[in-house]
View 1 (cartoon, rainbow, N blue to C red):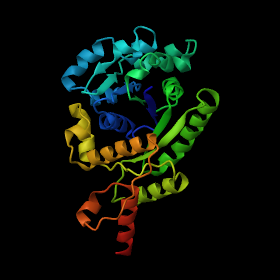
View 2: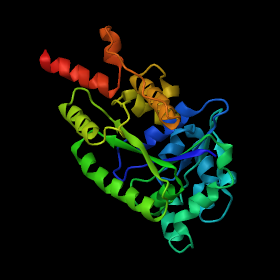
View 3: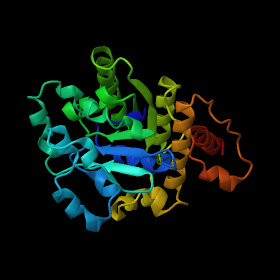
Length: 293
């Protein structure tokens, strides 16, 4: 059965959609098909994997996750192949009203889980991009998911929002999905020149040492540009810092799923290589050297 992970944070603008799109591309390979479900009414994951010229026809097709949720079509009929091993259940223009329609449905919080049941075996990974809220759409993703990944921007207010999200996950686990696990926290939009980024990273790593992914996602112009072309950053500029960071994160996700130990990281003697590394250990080491210098 495909492993289902929700990528969520009720605080918007933390890079959740960017993480979902790039991880879907990074995890996909022959024999390991990935399904991305765009449950966010903004539809950014859909546009991030779809050529701009194809978007109008897609939105007008009447085959999106919205129609599946409200009972118009089967989920399989909404799914389209967007890469060799990447499939997409797109968002649609009417998804913004889905929570109102779901509110009157019996078993409304399990709607996504029921839709996925017939097709879960068809994919190695299923990833759900959720809206930046804790409403019915996000609740559906948490009830259906095996695990949750929490992208977290390296800024002060992100810490406050994190406690609310973790509380919600605990309540969902207690009442609706006892098997729900937290895959981990992903630090995003890390600015190595900003002292606050380092302080937040150290604080989060201190409080959640076993949950923070060691791969850190830097601020990157290429990451910002790639969605406008309907591409992941891995495809748009494979040599960029953002692309390397997401490849590292995908590899780390696989190691965690397979129960493999974290890779031992030795400090590089090559200054050029050390500057390119975007792991917590490397970032902390560079900061410490800067302070000593």
